[in-house]
Amino acid sequence: MTKNCSLAETGELLKAAKKLVIVSHVSPDGDTLGSSLALMHALRMLGKEVIMNVDDDISTVYSFLPGIAEYRRFAPDESVDADLLVIVDASSADRAGNALEVVKSPAVLNIDHHKTNTQFADYLYLDSDAAATAEIIYSLLLEMGIKLTRDIATCIYEGIYTDTGSFKYSNTTSNTLKTAADLLKYGVNPSLISDNMELKSRSQVEMLRKVLETLTFLKDGKIAYIEIPLELYDHNVETDAFISYPRYVEGVEIALLFKQVEENLTRVSFRSKEIDVAKIALSFGGGGHKKAAGCSIYAPLKEAEKVILEAVGELFV
Ligand code: AMP
Ligand code: MN
Ligand code: MN
Image (cartoon, rainbow, N blue to C red):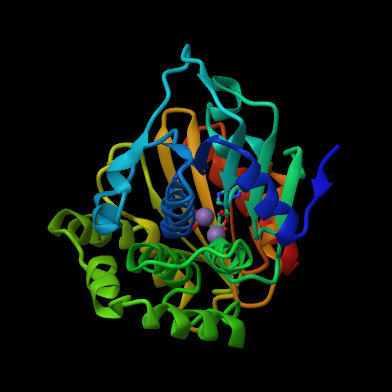
């Protein structure tokens, strides 16, 4: 049974622990990394021992984040003791990678903003109105009476920047912008973040050229998708932004990106104008938000495309 916590209860849980493991979700993005790192800096200021974990590679795009070098990946046979295991910005247990097996902790706390949260932890702080988990972390640290530093503020800003598509998606609220405005008072440099996030490697642009050739339209242009087959996939090349190309084509209601990361593993990203794609992603074991969701299909690219496009196509009959 999951106990849904208030912000104050969440703060008390964190304060009561001496040794914590903070886990970011697999396929890490700026929100899970920024939120987790902000929490790490804050808890270390309180004298806590904090271990950072993500069961995946981290894109070099995030190298500028203060504290990013603290992350380590657990070996599958490892055993790590902690008073509290904190899982950040993940809506289901599989998104935590191997941490739930490796870490021996009396309790698991999940801090999240996905409406598709599966209530897998012992304690949950969920606010699905928050644009980013980082927005929750900001309120949490204030609730805990922690004085923000520039490093903490930078990490929180990064999380909000990522999940709002630099303050432009429909999840951006007045609270989001108020939080960002406050973060600037702690010395955040917005252009440092956008310069790092917008910078593209040559290999990224070269891959984009090939990926755009796969652009396909279905259902009178209401569905558009692009694909990254295994031959093209390179875990060192950042592709998160590619989906914005089919997404913003006139007439497109649902855009998809199929990325084959292993022979039998295809990651699917969904974006929509109005249709609830979180529902579709959830039905395939994934999750997300109404207009931005994802899932993993344990099949090769073409097989994954077939099942997903069939399900998406049914919405337009
Ligand atoms: P992405 O398309 O990877 O940028 O993800 C869009 C949204 O869907 C984010 O909020 C992710 O956290 C969520 N998401 C992506 N993949 C998965 C998955 N396999 N399981 C659950 N949620 C996911
Ligand atoms: Mn995320
Ligand atoms: Mn998020």
